[in-house]
Length: 169
Image 1 (spheres, helix red, strand yellow):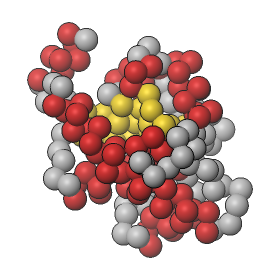
Image 2 (tube, rainbow, N blue to C red):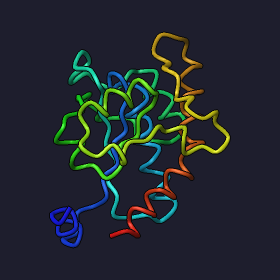
Image 3 (tube, rainbow, N blue to C red):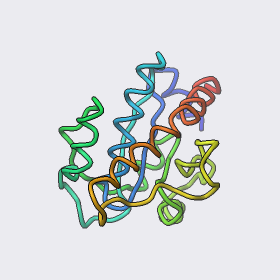
């Protein structure tokens, strides 16, 4: 904890890591939506990253359907390579945001601080508690639009949490 405060005072940004299964759809979509939402809200000093709970998709690009939906809505959509969440990336994160409950459980197996792990839909006051963001990968292209809608709906609450974390340092 003392090191975290020292790093933060040296200018290290708040780190938010979004987590899904393979890191090719939901979590990179959330990373990019959060980047723009934070910029639009004037929030600086925060870094958004994403990772998956499995290695199967390691180093793969974002799913073409996810990238297409992001591009159609004006979000950054290129230059993504899937990676797996590690204990080190969890330890360096200030907030870990999972897409569904199974991802929360996977992250909690590695996390040293379970208090910084949340479900994305918990930041959406209109979402059913514990509902998570459904995986669009096996479905039609329309599922990716639904995923984007769910991610966008959680952004105001997520950014409120980022502000709270920033204020605590």
